[in-house]
Amino acid sequence: MAQNLQNGGQLRPIDLARGHGLSTQAVRNYEEDGILPAAARTPHGYRTYTPQHARALGAFLALVPGHGHRTATSIMRAVNEGAADEAFRLIDESHAQLLDDRRTLQAVESALRDLARTTAPEPTAPEPTAPEPGAAVSGAAVSRPGGTFIGPLAAELGIRPATLRKWERAGLVRPRRDPLTGYRVYDEADVRDARLAHQLRRGGYLLERIAPLLAQVRAAGGLEPLEAALRDWRGRLSARGRAMLTGAAELEAYLREHEPEHEHEPERDPGRAPER
Image (cartoon, rainbow, N blue to C red):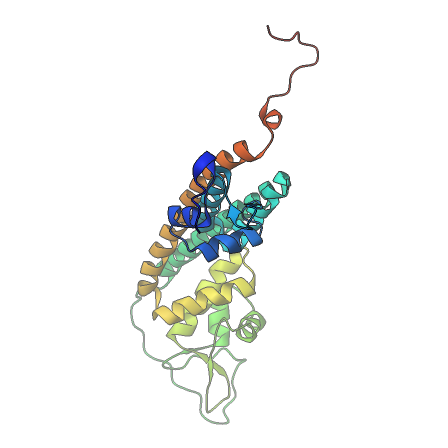
């Protein structure tokens, strides 16, 4: 651009971009998305920005780490359209989601602690023998070396076998079938998953929310490697909460510049005499 438009508080796109480590195309895109107020134009059609645009851009970039790009965009668009209440609603939703994520983490940590207590080593007992082919079997609760059947596991957890079958359909447990009897056989990992699912269900979590958590346990190769993932999860939640504070401060500063001055004045008591 031939003319430097920084005089009089005006900023060129390149000035705004460099000040925030962005490209000029990114600045133009943010304006088109409503993240920035519409820019004025020179007689030659060049965009000109002001310190208010710089404040808006700073607020948006501060909101992204805590709320995500999409929500941060919606917040800024609402503010620039004069719909501050909608922006506050979006912020409230993000805080509610963060609180829900914290509760989920606490439930998983509690379930893992309970699971560690219930899986403490016990004295070994003689292994039961498998039923002979064709022999009468009392229900489905028959133990075998290398695993347990549905009845003993359901009895241990205090649930019905039908509940374990429902969990299997939801992908929470994946027992194999005994080749002799056709019964479900739950190995050590299946028992672990069933116990963890049971703890989470007692905490009120739906099956569709439990399945991804169990997938994490399986991917981690057990409970011990998951501890590192839980620490990382906790750290990310803390970082997100702090980022929300930073974003709120930047947005408040922008709101004070963007909104009319009278909107920030406290309401006066109509029965009170005006101050002199």
